[in-house]
Amino acid sequence: MSTMTTISENPKAPAAATAQESTATGLIGFLPPKAARALALGGGVLTVASCFLAWTWTPRFPGDLTVTGYPGGLQLQVLVLGALTTLFALSSYGVKGTRWLTPAGADPAIRLATIATFATAWFTVGAISVELGGPVNLEPGGVVVAVATLLGLLGGLGLPFERPALLPLDPEDTGWDRFKHRAGNGWSTFKAAFATGPVRRLPAMNSAVEILIITAVLAVALGVFTYGVGTEYDELFLGFLITTGLGFAAVNKSGLTQQATSLTGKHQNLSIAGAFIAAALFPFTQTDDQYATLGVYILIFATVALGLNIVVGLAGLLDLGYVAFLGVGAYAAALVSGAPTSPSGLHLPFWAAVLVGAVASLIFGVLIGAPTLRLRGDYLAIVTLGFGEIFRIAVNNTDGTSGPDITNGSNGIASIPNLNIFGFDFGVEHTIAGFTIGRFANYFFLMLLIMAVVVLVFRRSGDSRIGRAWVAIREDETAALAMGINGFRVKLIAFALGASLAGLAGTVQAHVTYTVTPEQYLFAGPIPPNSAFLLAAVVLGGMGTMSGPLVGAALLFLIPNKLQFLGEFQLLAFGVALILLMRFRPEGMIANRRRQLEFHEKDETPATLAKAGA
Figure 1 (cartoon, rainbow, N blue to C red):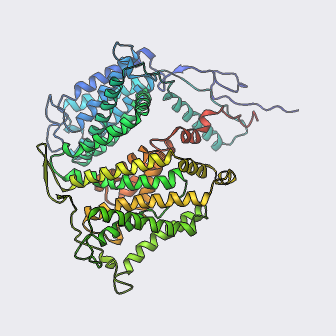
Figure 2: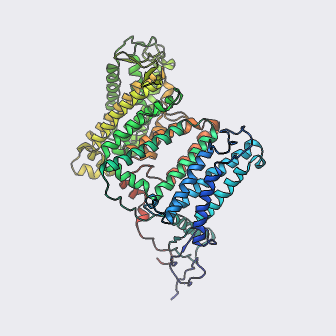
């Protein structure tokens, strides 16, 4: 009888061992743990100090990094990350007053913080060298920050962690199989380096203190969003993406995000109200109407994405033509807006136009959903995709030549007048508490009110009996039907409700853009909103959650707008970013616990046997 043997990847282990004993070493094994921790702390402190030195000799590089003692531009981002690294390192030493910063453990947070600091600093040094003609244009401060962040990175990667038990090699494997096996073991080790322990529970606090903490979190969120929207040049925005992405990951690994989430969940209604108040303060942080323009378009995009979340996230219906409902609402409002190019010649007040747009979208939702919602999966997706294209072709042809004169065809409906509600003209500037509020800021506040209505509808419907029926249909339609749920009626309600919310946002979009044309409502394109971007906002933000699609929509609108300097490579870079996000965060940026368990089920189960063991 022949026996099966295995080859261990650890040369110090016995040949027949099936696992490797856990050892606490760092990703960089030549650094002693104490030296690595001291190096991470020293690198963070030196990075902070270097931000107050000049990094280049000429102001030709954007942000003017020639000033000593006054950080600017990308220096501010490196300064924030350096301070974060320093605080996490001090917390790992148990310094009084810093332990609360790492409730889930300090070492994974230090690793990510040093990686973030290194990435932003070396991106800046590289950009200076490329744009100014080589590293010779660096001042001593630029050299110091490069060395300091490199030392900090070495220290962070040298911090010890418990290595996982690696699966042994199979002697019958081919060379390619062995490569894949070693790569898998290497990836398991790398993930273990960033694994965190359980998060310490928050101590009992007075409600007023908890509310103050929530207020501080919202203030930080408002500051980050305002800074990101206001980035004035390409290098600064790319640095912002690196800083916020890796910096947030470090904060998340520290456990602070989980503790903040528990507080906002405890005071959910107050947190939602505070978030709307923080959003309402955004126009007051701007000196002109330029970035309020981005703000109002982000709100329109986010509102429509939240409506789609009812259809896709709660009910599980894949709708690839959802942008058509936004177009129905926009065209309906434009037809009754009193625009000189409107074939109808009607001029209704805004409240009536809102009802017309929402009801028109609802009717179309019912008309499309009634004959098609008996389909499932890919078949339903194909039908909804067809509806989106039929809508665009129909409004192109109703120009009085190819069909009846309803929408002016490809010319669309132009010169849509600004809204005037109770004497408040949205097209002119207004002064509020000494602040000048421009046209787009006026519409920003209006869209904020409409989003509040959509959030209320989403919350109430999601927690209701019909909302639980949607979730049951999404998880297993056959089982839901067997339990007595009327699947067709439940899905039709979701389809009609989502359509009406999109139409509600479309009524405001028509007045903001002055013009509605068929080209605004495509399935896919470089400029949102379109069906592909809306679906990506829901999936990447977190299906079935309230805040996920809002965050996803904000990022998916802001990033393409800021990456226009990439030209024809914009969609390529954007697509690579989406692939990476879906690979490492498939449940979305903000996901509920159920979806996290679904996508990370393998992480919760024991490792499977190797082929030799089987």
